[in-house]
Length: 369
Image 1 (cartoon, one colour):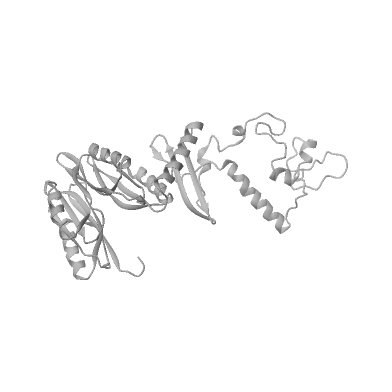
Image 2 (image 1 turned 135 degrees about the vertical axis):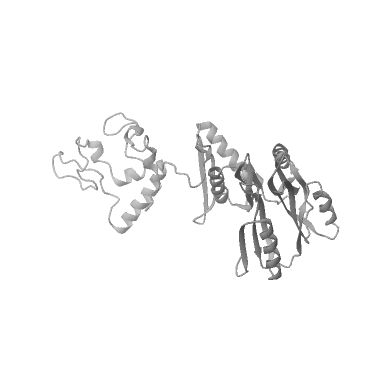
C-alpha cells in the first residue's frame, strides 16, 4: 500500500465494530474490506481493514434481514451506488446482513442473500458454464442451517478466472492457499465458515494473469498425464527470465487426510538431480578442479600404471572391469557410460532395492538447517 496509512482490527464484537467504524471514519480513514462470522458461542465477530480514502464515496447499511436485502439493493441503485460487499452473521438469535455501497461505475451485481449450500454449489456450476463470475460471498449461520450471501455478475471477455470453496479444514485450506498463491491467484475473500458447530474456512480467489483457456489447457494436460501413469499427485513449474512465474499442483499429497499437493509438497528428486549435477560438474571443470578427459574409475589390479581418475580405487570391491576403467567424465554427462537401470556392478538389481529412501519416505524430508 506504499506510504498510505492503514490499520487492521480483529475479532471485534458488533458494538466494538460500530465504535471503531465511527472512530476511524472521524479520523479520516475509510473502510476497505471486512468479514463477519460467528464464534463457537454463536456470537458475531468482525475483522476489518481501514485505509486512506481513495476518493470513492462509500457507505454501509446495518441489520438488514435477508428478505429486505434485494429491496435495499434496488433503493441504493438509484443514486448511482452499487453494492460491492455483503456480509451475513447470526445476531440475537436471528440472521442479519450488512452491506457496503460504492459510488462507482461498473456492472450491477445480482444479489442472492440466503442461498443454501446446495443452491450455492449449483450457482457455482452455472457460473462456470455461463458468462458469470462470483463477485462476493459470505457464509453465515441460521436456525435452519448454513446460508450463503452471494453476489454474481456478467464478466467481460478479459475478466480473470476465479475459484471458491466452502467448508474447508485448516489443513486443506493451507494446502489450497499455497497452490493458488503459486498459480498466480490472489485472495479476494477469506472468511470463517460455520459448519456443523465447527468453524471451517471459505475463500474466493481470483487470477491475475492467465486466461481461462490457458488454465484449462494446463489442467487438462496435467490430468491426462496423471490418468495415463496412475499418478496420485503431480506438480509443474514454469520459469521465465530466471524467475518463477507459475507453479501449480494437482491430486493428493496424502490419501488419508485428502490434503492436496501444493508447491511446498516434497517429491523425490529422481532424475532432476542430473542437470543439477551436470551444472556443478562443469563449474568444477571451469575452475580446473576436474578435466573433461578425466577417467572416473581406476583398476589397481590392471598391469601397468593406473589411469588417472577421479575416484581412484575407492570403490573397487569387487575389482573394476575394463568397462568401468574406460568410463570418462563426458561419458557420464552424456549418458554414454553403458550403465543400465536394471544393472549395477554386474548384478541384476532394481534401483528401488538400492535406494534406502524408497521404503523410508521420512528420509525425504527437507533440511531444517
